Amino acid sequence: MSSIKIQNLRKEYSNKVQALKGIDLEIQEGDFHALLGSNGAGKTTTIGILTDLVKKTSGTVEIAGIDIEKNFNQAKKLIGVVPQEMNFNIFEKVEDIVIQQAGFYGLNKKQATEKTHEILKSLSLYDKKEQISRTLSGGMKRRLMIARSLVHDPKILILDEPTAGVDVKLRHEMYEFLTDLNKKGVTILLTTHYLEEAELLCDKISIIKEGEIIISGKKEKVLNDLSTQIYLFESQNFKPQSLKNYKLSKTENKNEFQVQINKNQSLNQFLKESLAENFTFESIKPKTNRLEQLYLELT
Image: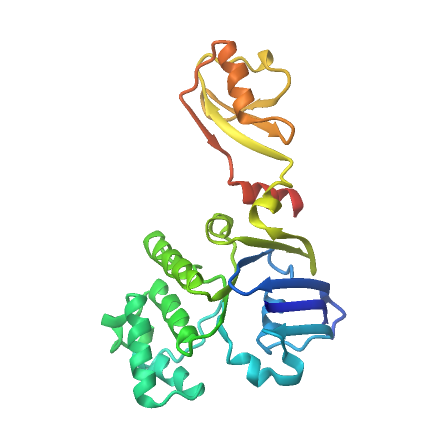
């Protein structure tokens, strides 16, 4: 079953800017799906339409089979949203912010308090529940946003750059939390500028450029479209002119070279040919992760 189904979605603003040019996107129940694109590509507009904050020009959007134009009140009960910007009352206590959100979805005070405490514990915020929210660190504020979005047990979670401004340790804690949440059956739609984050977490990937989806599918299938991979390696006795089948160049670092491996080549073959020439390597590493390389090629 589709958790989110978008067909021929268009959005044209009053200044004639076409933010979305007829996109199609289907996210199945239980998917962890990344929507990637540069600033202005159409990611936030798409999420705005999904959450009824932006009115579409044309096309259809369904949440678990519910047309949001016909019955958004029913559809919104299935969605939890973590927007880019902090939008809670910074003078309220952490606990009160989440309890109040639960009340919007019909939970009574007892149910709301129990559910709030459960989520705050899972996000390592329980010991901050009495704290005024403006005194939290940036990473804790981001986790508070996630806690608030989950208090009504949504089937679909939409995350718009949820780890922006979060330190490395907290980011990885959030990765574990989101992975566990997805394993429990929650469908997750993620936008992020951290491409390694998308490659680590997501099983499906879509890339949007200038209001159009230019590639979409299972992560491994999408990455198979990568035409080249670039590696950096260190060697004191390497002679680039000896391996003419590869695009090689010297970097600014001493003894470091860059090699481009095309789709019809392989890193193993390159190493085999290098060893046959008696070259030795101190280190070898990818210049970027695979998804970042594909993203750069496409955008």
